[in-house]
Amino acid sequence: MTQKTYDVKGMTCDHCVQAVNSELSSLSGVASVQVDLPSGRVTVTSEQRLDHATVATAVDEAGYELVDGEAG
Image (cartoon, rainbow, N blue to C red):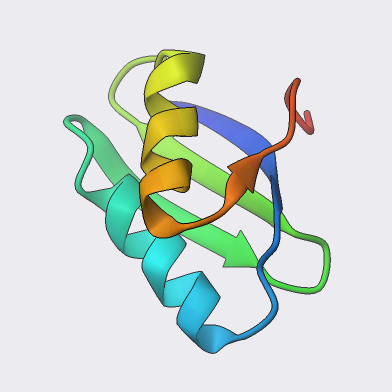
């Protein structure tokens, strides 16, 4: 398993959290998604490393923006 944390711009409420969680959870190989609304950070645990563009597309589909670079 691998874990990555990303910064997501534009999330302001629980609905935002649910939308991002739903889109990222639907990606192949994703085991869990944890969204921290106050910091805007999203931690994704997956079977293998996810392509940055794939994560960015999923976040965009949810209506938000993946900030360039990774949080850590």
